[in-house]
Image (cartoon, rainbow, N blue to C red):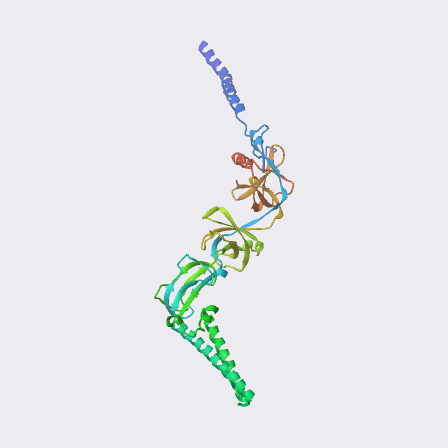
Length: 408
């Protein structure tokens, strides 16, 4: 009977013991759940009051002390256009490719590659039979003019005495005029062959050394630097071969290619800034002198040319250059650069809703200048945005996976 009573007692008390064990286990787990840290960013869900696209910091969050805000405002901003590629070129208005005007043999070369030469300075001496013939022809016409003038004077004297008729006087007058025309033609031919007035006057001497009659000098058309030489003593050359190239590098051109989308902002007279790798801390300034009339069909760019002063010859042709065109100031809606954040392929700012609530806004940005960026859409004048600390705010949003109306 006792055994049966004990078994009955156990059956009746087992549910009570089980409930006690469950209660003890629940009590031991509950403090751990109460002590768990609460996130400082509220996740947007149907059960909470935080709207979608809003990040809320908990009261007293240390991040609040790191945030600084700024007003979206209209401000003057100088825009700039960046070229895709740029190159330094010689000023083609001050670049000369020189060749002999008559065929001949080079007798002497007076200039070397890299030499600075002055205007009208001799570069080489050429021995040319054709040039000698032109000089001898000039001397012959000078003699013909003297003879015709003497004959005309004698005819005048005879006409006054009645020794000849008026027709003979007119014939000799015409001969004198024709001789002068032939002399002018011969002189112009010598100028075309490169002779100066002083050298032509020297041909009026009674006698000339035979060797000098056939010699012609090639001269520099302006002061500059010899950038190419293809002349060797004894070589036979003609007008088809370039023997010297002279460039005045006191001014140079810079050629830059801009995307066709920027053509509307390009025009002559705009200021440009040029930087080259050889002098990274120096900015060279100039103005646009030409904007291309056509778009390159391969690169979809427009060519722009600008003039640069180069008195110290630091800029050298064929240098690559970074070219920026400066657009005059205009009023635009802008925010500090540090307020702009990228989330994937989206550009956003955080607008201030209250002291601890911030809403992200997708924005469209334009040009930038200094510490400010143009805003084309997304916010309006007077909105308050987070400037300093916006990156930390974005990090909190990403860590809390706040709903930002699209994938982060």
